[in-house]
Amino acid sequence: MRTTTVDLTADTPRGAAARRTTAWTAGGLALAAGLAGGLLAPADARQGQAQRLMYLHVPAAWVAYLAFAAVLAASTAYLIGGDLRWDRLARAAAEIGVALTAMAIGTGALWGHLVWGTWWAWDPRLVSTALLLLAYAGYLVLRRMLAERTGGPDGGDRRVAGPAAAAGIGGFLLVPVVHFSVIWWRSLHQPATILAPERPPIDPRMALALLLAVAAASAAALLVLGHRMRRLERRLGGPNEPPTPHTRTVRRTPAQVR
Image 1 (spheres, rainbow, N blue to C red):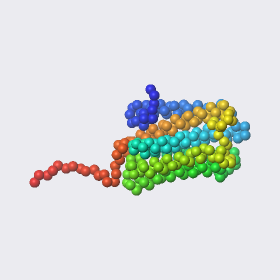
Image 2: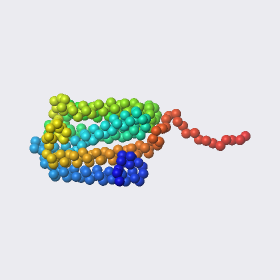
Image 3: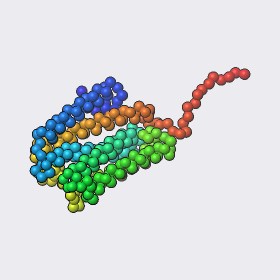
Image 4: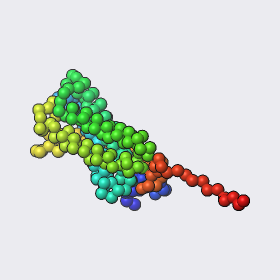
């Protein structure tokens, strides 16, 4: 039976089965990627064993791109249709993207320390990635501030969702800047490998391990997204009409006859 994103977020037996299937798929891909990257793929001729950090660094960066693309798509869908479920999807995807971008920066810093001899360099790719992290961390902070100001729930209030959607769309402008920074400016960071304009300058065994790692990270991120969306739907209740500060529960009492 084909698993869909709706299944992953559903609080039903079918949804639970879809999440288990995705978890097993992510685990199998991660095991295959670990074996391919650790045993099958050779060490880089110049960077040595430090190059194996690529199998963590690159998947984190690429899936972060996908998460921010999901923020863009969900924010646009919210502005068009007004369904607050799209706003909750944008929030969950941004949380995943921020975590993965931080992981990409951390593994990149370790890789740079081993290869370049420094934890940080004012390199266009590094600086633009840090700005991307700050932009979407700021997006999440903006959501929290608006929710505190309005008194409504983050992910269940249109007064939060509208400005957040605009910020989520604007933040995506940094993604192509990050990706093409190694082409537009002189950079210490190596250029593209898999998506290089010419024949990818990478050993086929390395390419296989890298593709498996990207697939594993994608499946794991999809699983986390499903769980996060399910929790948000549970906590926020209805899909479109959130409680507001002006909404009060009225308790009815029997009329007294005098």
